[in-house]
Structures are given as structure tokens and as C-alpha cells.
Image 1 (tube, rainbow, N blue to C red):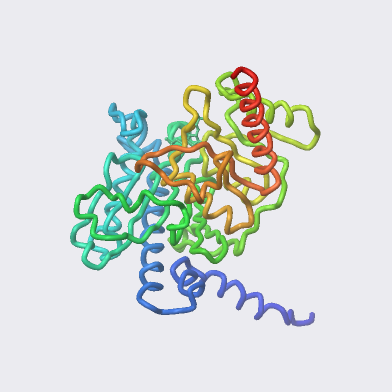
Image 2 (spheres, rainbow, N blue to C red; image 1 turned 90 degrees about the horizontal axis):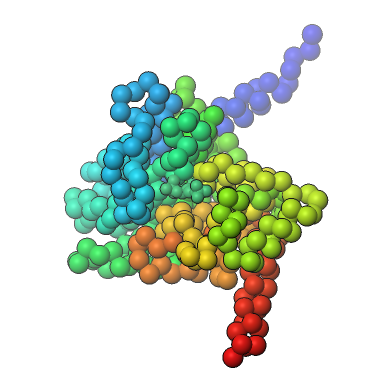
Length: 355
Ligand code: AHM
Ligand code: MG
């Protein structure tokens, strides 16, 4: 029998791969041990800890007292709050206490940002997050996620109104999400490509699983809640009619943005959450959902649009501002945009004809 000359190399590769943890990857990416690089690496490490805690609770949710169901309260968005929303929201706050890293946390679940005063003299960062995205999936054991974004604080925010957060998506210095699926996956970018880490439960560590992810320029999937068809503008209805009548399209919708986005990131296609005639701003929140995912998709070579403008350029009027969202492969987002442009043109012509 001949010796397998590849074995030592394979082993070396496997070892190296297993050692590529999230915090090490951030430092490698920045190619520096500067204070800022250490901060970002430490912030990502804390987010990973939050993800592990939430993942642990989710995997045992059916067995744990008080993990499932509603709290009976309604959040600032007017939505019924789930117990898991509260738990996950608090976990993020807890992991950043006494860290010296993050001064403010702004979340979809909280009316106003949460300040950690002991961190503020040195922690000039703000974490924006959606602690459990797709929480209607929680009670039925389907995939959910978390979305996060990091911005640098500008000014002293003496009034505590966090006005400096009302800026476009280019102010983000990092963004990512956690997908709680059959395995727990953390995807992040610090403006140097998009990378995925899978939680290895035996190590309790997120290990690099895909580096420099690029979204295909076109994919077969369109992902949208078609139950809203009756409420949409004609432009979106026309787009849906188009994909129904052309070969090569397939629908996939999981009711949880992170899962639907993850599929598109890896396989291409487009996710749509349009506004309706009555609610043109749609459902998804710019600061906690759309802008972080737009940051990621642009890093992966894709596109994110409100229909008429790049998500990254959109400026929120308030912390909980919403925008329509069309995100994914470049060609597929552009196709949706072309229907919206046509709709705008048709409206203008009708108005002119009536004036
Ligand atoms: P949530 O953050 O309150 O869970 O709401 C966001 C979710 C997204 O994950 C998902 O894409 C969408 O809402 C589903 O909404 P709908 O039930 O209207 O299709
Ligand atoms: Mg959400």
C-alpha cells in the first residue's frame, strides 16, 4: 500500500479551517492589530456570543418554560411581541454590558435606543439590530434570523434622540445576519466581501464555511408574499404576471427575510417586499433590516432598491422608518425596477391627460 502523500496537507488544511474563527477572520481582513481592528473583532465576538445564546434557546424552545408564545404586549411597530423577541433583544443588550465597546443599541423591538453609559466614554459604536426576524416562524420550529449593523456614533447625543443615526446606509461600518436553521450560520461583512461562518456546536465556535460569497447575476427564485397581490400597485402586479408567464422562474417564500435572503445570496434571484397602495412604505425597517442586507448584497455584487432609489442611499426620517425592499441578483432587481419605472411613467401620463 502506498502512503497517502496528501494526508498531512489535508490535515493541515482541516486544522487551519477549524481555527478560522470569526474574531480571527476580522483581524485578518483588516490586516492590523490597531485599536479599531481589535474593537471590530471584539464586537463581532460579542454578536457571536449573542447568536450562540439565542441558538441554544431556540433549539430547546419546545422544552423550556416560557420560551414560546406571545407576551401580550405590542411593540413600537404595533406588532404583538413574542417571548422570544424579548429574550433575544435582552441577550444583545446583556452581551454588550461592561464591554467598553458599544454605547447605544437600537432595535426593532425598542421604542428608543438603549444606552450603556459605562461604555460611552470609550465605546463610540452603535449596534442596530432586529433580534428575531421572522418571529411568526418561532412557534412552529421554522427558520428565523437576526440582522445587525454597526455605525460609529457622531457627536455626543446629549439629548438622547440618536439623530445621528438618521443617515444613509453608507454610514455602516459592518453588517450581517444570523440564520437559525438546521445549522446556525453567521454571515458578515466589514466592507471587504461577504463571509459565512457555521456554528460548530462541539467547539461552541463559529468557523469559516464560505469566503467571498458572490451572488449570481441572475437566479430563478422570486420571493414575495403573493397574498398581498390585491393590495399592490399595478407595476408590482405586472411584474408578478410577467414571472408567471415566463419560463425559468420559481417561487420560494419562507416568511422570514433572513432565510429567504440567504437562499438568494447563495443561489441568486430576488426578494420583494413592496409597499401597498394604502401603505406605500411597506413593512420592512430601513435601519434594522433593509440597510444591513443592502450593505451585504452590494458587497456580494448584487443590488438592493426601494424601487426608485438604492437602499444604501435612502435616509430614514425616523429610527423605525420603513421602505419597500427589492434585493438580490443585479439583473433580477433591475427587472423589478423596470416595471416600477413603467408604472411611474404611466401614472404621469394619466395625470397629464387629465390636467
Ligand atoms: P418581523 O421582523 O417583525 O418578524 O417582520 C419581518 C418579517 C420578515 O422576516 C418577513 O420577510 C416578513 O416579515 C414577512 O411578512 P409577511 O407575513 O407580511 O409576509
Ligand atoms: Mg424583522
